[in-house]
Length: 338
Image 1 (cartoon, rainbow, N blue to C red):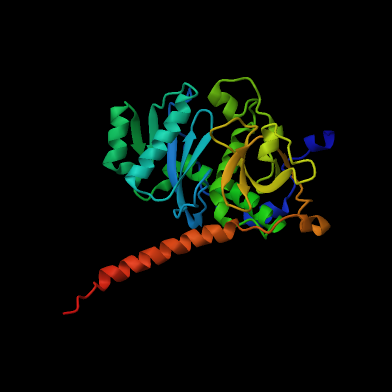
Image 2 (cartoon, rainbow, N blue to C red):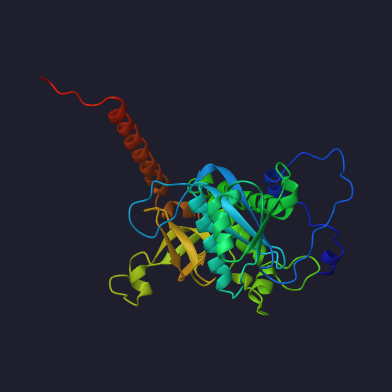
């Protein structure tokens, strides 16, 4: 509509005003210096790490729910395309940080993009494992000064933007479906925010970061994007395989939770959290309730109660009890009667 062309800034959003609130600046900094502009993808990549402070649920396709939890994330930002890549981590060890680097470079290699240079702050990126891997692959690396995190401003700003965006998506979904959703799903909200951010063109540019990164003129299909955490109705597995026997008068779909795109499949495939088992599977034959309409009022009586939180908590309790019994055995060795 023509009336939208007259807007100088986006209209206010209640969710953004609630979950992106910060202190107002009382003074303004002076002239900011600029950095050298990258001329091609992979020439310079900023990297930094995020401390979530909240344990994050780890999805798995089969088996008993794992006892581990995501607590951190490594963020990579390409200077030329402005695309980002998120890797959740259970710890900030050198081994996990190096695995995040390898995951990002494998994704870049799938688009025929070699990484030439990294820019990071002082932390795990000063470890010998990271520097030796960069030296082995012929990659350069520069650091910001100690305590001068603004010198890594591109990665710092992207962490802030993705965190704000994921917070709005996750808290909005929790307000709509509090019986099922939890803050412990933040790793997938963060990844969903990154996927959405990569498909939106920047101001003054016609191509999205994903188009620039992949060197493709095909615009990402926004119809594959659905609200994070919205209800998903997945077709029965037998019906997906073409077996209709015994399914004429029974439930033909089950209810799940949308966790965003599957990183290992097409964008038309969504990760769906099972309310019964807590397992997460990539699904194609599914329908999305983007307005959260089928989980309220009379329709809510048709759905079974959610039990995935109890199974996830039970796995954590097993870990705590196992650690406690191990400590008891260590502190109180068994005695032998004479």
